[in-house]
Image 1 (cartoon, helix red, strand yellow):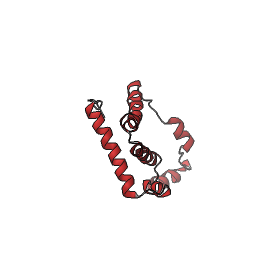
Image 2: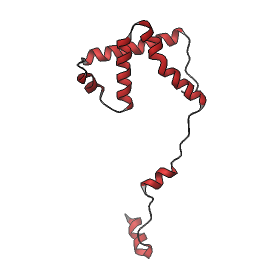
Image 3: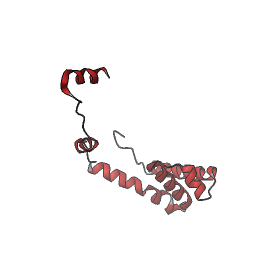
Image 4: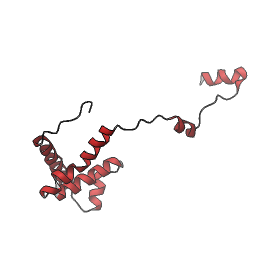
Length: 116
């Protein structure tokens, strides 16, 4: 506050501040590389490859619901409640899905990329 008062008393008026629109125009965005896009696309296929193809469609659906809730910052518990799915059953299906995907990736020797 002292800086503002000194600025105002020296006759300069109100200090200039950028608008939110100006800040958005100046924001630097770095597009993902082709390798990153390829890795992300393959990760999106993991539920179909390791769950649905082996008859674990319930785990795939629950994992998809959980990921959607995470992406949109929505409560997973409420999403389960709206679908009349018990909390413990939902988390068990999600955890089983994650475990099966992890086992499938380990079996196929899929390694994490450097820097991840």
